[in-house]
Length: 173
Image (cartoon, rainbow, N blue to C red; front, side, top):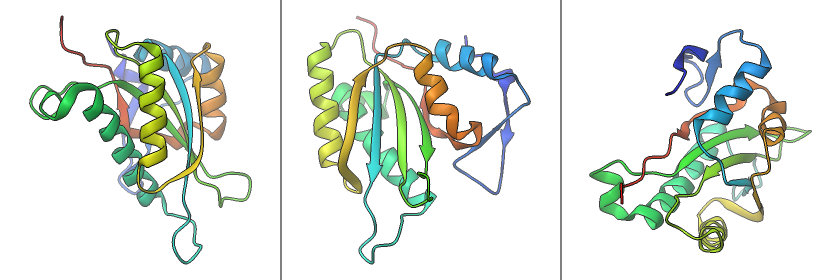
């Protein structure tokens, strides 16, 4: 069961962020660790715009949603997503780099139990390399423990992208 009491109301000025209540870092770690049985950790970078400008937060969010939608559609099919709401478990955090000109996201993903690990890694590689707006620089690893969540949130809880954070919902076999 989700412990939604950790999440405060949505901040109207920044649509892609959620403001946390003043909870200790350990409780946030427990919340995100319990959200899904995480299997993969991915870092995605985003392309600069044609005039060499850094993409805005809204453009990064749009590209992130496209990436997750393509992964979900490949795993569960179009009708599984739209009609039944099937999706993989996901959580993402947005970072801007040291100088604020290198947008990247750190993702936790939960592989569906009926897919082989090698097939899921291959799918993630294909989606990361072909999604419009993503740079060719990305990293796919296996989830190796809660310290990954601590690493993700070193940017701060304000960088959590709630629009791409979901509990896994898979068809019952």
